[in-house]
Structure formats: structure tokens, C-alpha cells
Image (cartoon, rainbow, N blue to C red; front, side, top):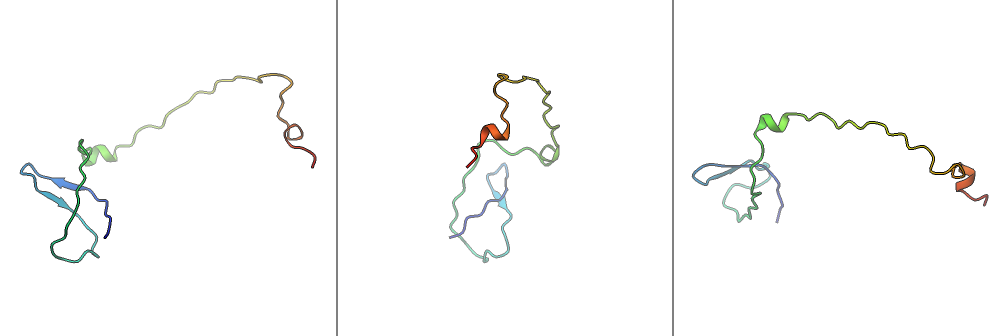
Length: 78
């Protein structure tokens, strides 16, 4: 048994077309199809890149002056 993930095209009359790898032998095969209820975006929308999120810096300062988190404070001498 082989698991294949690919994109299939469904026509108005309910026919499915999918591209498989060439190592699948020709002939009839028993298959299981799982359909996501919402269709994929069209090719142009899929290729459109979204702008990266921009985060502004928010200075919070030290929680306490006694908490410096120097290496000597974090690790023991042993």
C-alpha cells in the first residue's frame, strides 16, 4: 500500500483528475479519496506572497534591579 498526497481537479460533472508519480503501474487501483470541503485558491492567489508581519520593539526594562541574569548568577561554580 502506498500513500500519495497530490492536488486533484474536480470538474462540474464530478470527474477527478490527479497527477501521480510514474512508479504507479498502469491499470485499475483501489483508492481512498479525502476531500477538503473548501477548494484551494487558484494558482495566481497561491503564488501571491503576503508581506511579512512587522513587530515594533517595546522596551520593558528590567523586572528588578537585583535580577541581572549574568552568567555567574545563573550557573553554579561546580
